[in-house]
Structure formats: C-alpha cells, structure tokens
Amino acid sequence: MNNTSKSLAIINAKAPYSSTAGKDALDIALIFGSFEQTVSLFFQGEGVWQLIRKQDGSIISVKDYLKTFAAFEFYDIKNVYVCQSSLKERNLSESFHIDNIKVLNQQDFATELTSHHLILRF
Amino acid sequence: MKKLAVIITTPPYSNLSVTALDYIETALKSGIELIGVFFYQDGVLHADVNTQIASDEFQALAYWKKLHKEYLLPLHLCITAAEKRGMSDEHNKNIHPAFTVSGLGELVELSTKADRLVQF
Image 1 (cartoon, each protein chain N blue to C red):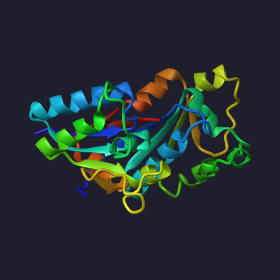
Image 2: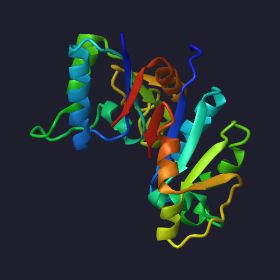
Image 3: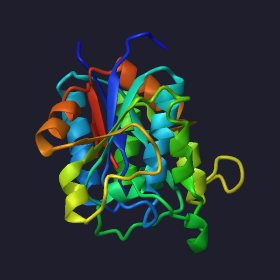
C-alpha cells in the first residue's frame, strides 16, 4: 500500500432497510477508516432515514447495521453530513441516533461533497 | 501516465454494464493505465459462471473475459458480497477464474493508487 491518502465521500441516498445499500456503504466507510483514509458520509434523499432514531431491523429479519454508526469515532470518521432540505421534505426533525452530525443546506452540502477526491454513491 | 480504477456495483443485466465495458475498453485502447476493476454489491453477479443470459441479450461475462485476456485486466471480486448472493470459490465454485477473489481492502488499494475512480 502506498501512503498517498485520498479523501473519500460516500453518498447515502437509499432508505435503510429496503435494500442492503446502507450496509454496503457502511462496510466501505469502516474499511477506509481502518486503513487510515479520510472518509466522510453524506446523507441525502431517502438516505436521511438511516439517521432516524428508534428503528429496529430485526422486526423484519434484517441485521440492525445502524447501531454500528456509533463506532464512527473509533474508525476516525469525523464528518457526517445530512441534507437539510431532504429532512424538511420528509418532515423529519434534526434529532439523530448518533451525535456530531452536521445539517447543511444544499449549497454547503455540495461544497463539502466536492472538496473530496473520490465520491461513491449508494 | 494517468491511472484509472473502476468499481462495478450494478448487475450484468443492467444497461450500465454495457456503458462500463465500453468505457473500460475505450480507456484501454487509448493507453490509459487501468489498474483494476472492483466488483461490489450486485456487480459480483458478473462473475457467476452459472448465470445463463438469453442469447439475444448483452453477454457481459464474455466481454469481461475478453478484456481480461487481451489486456491482462485485473478483475477483483468482493467475496463478502459474492457469498451474500450464493457465490463461492470453495463450495459451489461458481466464480469464473478470470476474477480474483478479494475484499474491500483491495478497493482501498485501488483508490489510493488511481488518479480517478469511476463507479457504474
């Protein structure tokens, strides 16, 4: 492995339990984190549901991957951004199941996103 | 020389497969160094030898085999994503040998080495 560090932005645009997209994105974030790469997470559109409290996948026989979000700090994942207008469109409050989430307007969300070297979308 | 890496997250029956393969072949023909293709999510289905796609449909696997042979293009398969979809190199042995069984660490490696990473 060479030491060139690149920052990765992962866009989460899908609801947590209708597909495995959220879990697949999480696995990438944790691997990049454990290789000491800079990773930021962006939640947009239906993806904002991944941050909402009191969800339990086990009711529909899906592993509750959302609880792993609590380990972001351990993996040095410091930047978690959520799109304010996506929350508003869904009438969701800015109350999440993990701390230190930055709620950004569309302009700032886009600015942060494009400040990364790589973008993956799930 | 600029280095390119590609991540495939869509299945072989997706129209994006055609676009991805065209893109990759064009890059290779233009002399761009393609350091590897990483298959993730439904993208791993590209490597399944048991999938028979109707003969009048696009044959993605045949195309991957051709690029792998002609250009020695590295094809990396996320084994966790493959096993989740019933594919295995140990049990049912349905992974085509052109594909290298690997994990997400390989994606980190590719993305740090490449000047550009493109997702299909």
